Amino acid sequence: MKSFTHKNEGFTCCVCGAENPPASATCRNHCLKCLYSLHVDKNPGDRAESCHGRMKPIQVEVARGSMSDIVFQCEKCGVVKKNKIASDDDRETLLSVISEQ
Ligand SMILES: [Zn+2]
Ligand SMILES: [Zn+2]
Image (cartoon, rainbow, N blue to C red; front, top):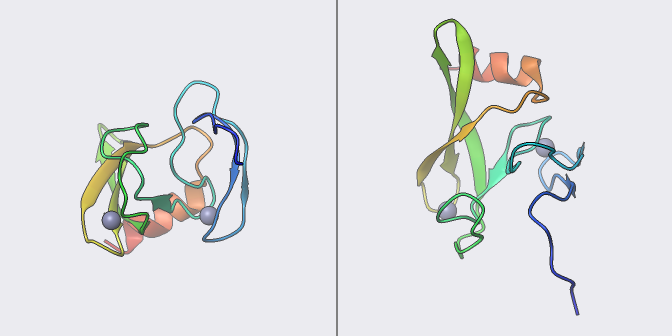
């Protein structure tokens, strides 16, 4: 039997294998290295979504000169969602998402 998983626990990314430490202030839902997320929430943190597809980072929003949000698209069902950038997200990956826009 699997024990209850707290949403702020660290996790190992299923896309790139990076170890993600537990988030202190925010509810981390994307990998700090490749920025991929998983389509598991209907609303942030509720784990009510049954899709479980990989959410690809397709866009980084810039507000007043600084990066603010990542826009994800689910590779399985195509839904688009936004999430706040975390302070330890990989800057080079963020910049590469921007340059692909
Ligand atoms: Zn990753
Ligand atoms: Zn999905």
